[in-house]
Length: 538
Image (cartoon, rainbow, N blue to C red; front, side):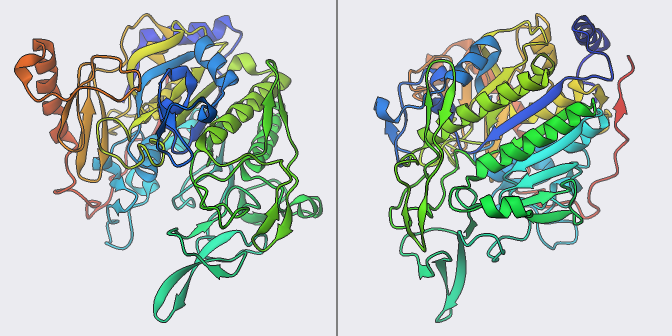
């Protein structure tokens, strides 16, 4: 399927050539996909309300994130006013990685995935959608790296290397490197959640999890020097000596990402980094097991107006009794957003160090709304509205700052296809739409509508109206200060003709994707083998 016509592609090629970027030296791509963060959590979006320590509404500045680096990237690059994902993790990641909606990949919700063709287990994304984001990037000549959260079977994807927190095979299973996990044990015929670190049952409601923040579960894939494809880390004498209570999973991810970037830069090969950070996701706080904290703390950081300073963690103790010696923050999603800002500062410094800051596109976004506020909510756009920032200083973008347009996470795959010069065949359905024509020409709009899903609920909006998963219509033509208090439409005679016309157009779109009841599972024959991906002719 062609996403940009030859004139637009020629225009983009001329931009690359004007920067001294030839067809073999394509721009690097870093896609940082954060976890459970609503647009309202980022100050750049200007919301008067954000999330407190439990994810509830607050306007207390004490709980406001501070993001000087993201603010700069948003203002010097672009940030999108209305970007949508699905309402919860797995369907959003499916949307991102396939460029398709649930009527094709069948991941309707975390707890509602279509069965595979043989009726056993859920349908893998790499089976339902033969061209995933890694395939597209590799066809474009990119070296590919996946770091962070997976939440899916990873064996069938084609990334070159990876660093997963946690990795394949750690679910409810002990591994030799860490006991920071919640596991199930049977007691009197019932499953009980236990903290493996303390060997005590939990009184509070929780779920099985392999710790991904402190003393994390880390698995490497195709790491240079390893004899096995998958290997638990730490795996060297040095890393085993350094690993422990002070090891923070997001730091480990970035360490391996930077090593990959350095190696590929030396090889003069463009890289695609798919960084699915856990930051933003709530989790059991192993350092404070009796606290009922929603978000574990991060290492403390401080910003002096030009650079960040990170406090080295100093955690001591054992078996649930720990002292952080004032080096770890309190709970709260705002501290996770702050730490993302710090890590993005490190990204920018690394790009400068490698001399590729003007030949790299950095994309920051999230997979669904904040836990306690929007996550798994089909109401209005609480669950779907996420931040999206694109920073590309060397690409001569024709847009700058806030863009009042509609974008969907499915748009990332075809955007990467355009950047890599990859042509997806017309016979292969992709629901996303490349952002390159909007970003690099005078095109005023990107999309007429955006769509999301929540199990069998259909969510769709245009510039004026929104239909949510409860079949309530909202007037979204205004700009509420909290980004969500849109008026409900109960009397269509009291809105404009343009509102009614857009409603009618959106109603025509929904049946194309509303197939939960009739095509919930994979077709019996599976997916037909599509035509091959091709490189665009220059």
